[in-house]
Amino acid sequence: MNTPLRCLWRSVGLLALAASLHAATAPAVSSSNPKKPNVLFIAIDDLRDWVGYFAHNPQSKTPNLDRFARMGVSFSRAYCAAPVCNPSRAALMSGLRPYTSGVYENNNDWRTAIAMDKPLTTAFRNAGYYVCGSGKIYHEAYRRREEWDNYLDNEGGLPRVPAGQSDGVGGIKFAPLDCKDEDLNDWNIVNYGIKQLQTKHDKPLFLAVGVHKPHMPWNVPRKYYDMFPVESIKLPPYLENDLDDIPPAGLRMAHPQTDHEPMLKSGRWKEAIQGYLAAIAYTDMNLGRLLDAFEKSPYRDNTIICLWGDHGWHLGEKHHWRKFTLWEEATRAPLIWSVPGLTKGGTISERTVDFMSIYPTLMDLCGIPKPKHVEGDSIRALLANPQAPWDKPGMTTYRYKNHTVRTADWRYIRYENGDEELYNDKTDENEWSNLAMKPEYAAKKAELAQYLPKTDHADIGGRAGKGAEDFGDGKKAERKRERQKKKNVE
Image (cartoon, rainbow, N blue to C red; front, top):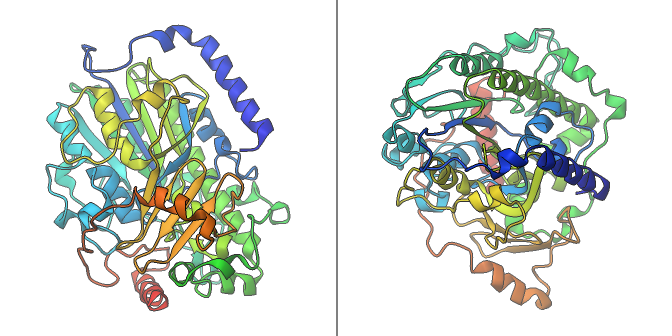
């Protein structure tokens, strides 16, 4: 993080601490409290680290995400379990890592591998909670509504780009729409959350709200595009020969010919970034609506809020677009917690965690016994003291036997075929120099390799194209892209 911004955030944190000493020293929500805390569980799809508290991209405009960060503890090194929608969400919600469940890809029907007694929703229902939700919490190709007491099934449609108007470059879909904020389905998803916050419930409330943007297509009202004039857009850090020291397995994941080469030929790289920034701004607006309703609700004083993004996103870094890699851009995402009586507003933890911590932490905070199958550790200690000692790395898996271990300073990647990458993120934050083949780093690789799993569950399989993400131009086109991606990998 850039030094002046880090100092600014620390100053904000000190002011918030001084203003809330009474709240900070009050008993934390736990099983000893007679009234169980409510939980507001907010998921944002495809949101990378272009959020204010990361200070990673100053072009991004996220006043409401920044507002929520000032309410609690933000993690600057939080990593997904998998850089793909379906396995990331299945792991987070079940407590089972991909290499334990065998859910690695979007075409894996997680319901066949994760029984009804495993999910986070079941743990809360068994503890007496009213469990409801809307939007994208799991990958929506595989719904299991019986996990929920109530769920929004009709989100509404998504406006298409009018005929003759540009809709992006190849599979990277972006275009402004002449429509209203409420014409997109995320508006209805948030409306559901607002209604639940305005409703009196007889049981403690677990409310999940999952918005789709900034998932593609980046089609949002034109006013959000206007916030980011193309001429002012700056490209992300980029090295022309970045792939020269990447082993074959890493190159297959990058497959620059799929998205990046067409983008370069089109000359529309900045327009694509404009679209992503516009989609983030639209989501930020919806988050503001939800926070406004929360602050006016009877739940505001006894509710834990956990906000997470399911994984990151490349926008040309390492000649790659989308997620589907084990590098920093695809694996890092926002994680922000607000816990009454425990968290101090405006604080940032630079400890390395992954999203497998979310399930056990919620159990810990709500006084619910952690189910035996749950992998991951509670980070309650970091919520109380963001700088508390912590020596556990983050772990991300993409497909069978491909893993990355991330510590505060290092990233180690080992692919199924034995190919390796090693980066010193302390001195090389863009991961431009692969150190894995240098003999002087053999001990560091061995140190990090000890965290890799000893066994890997086989991929549970699934029909090609099933569960593919629709980027706004129909399932047929998306299945074609999935087949092309598979061909590139092979």
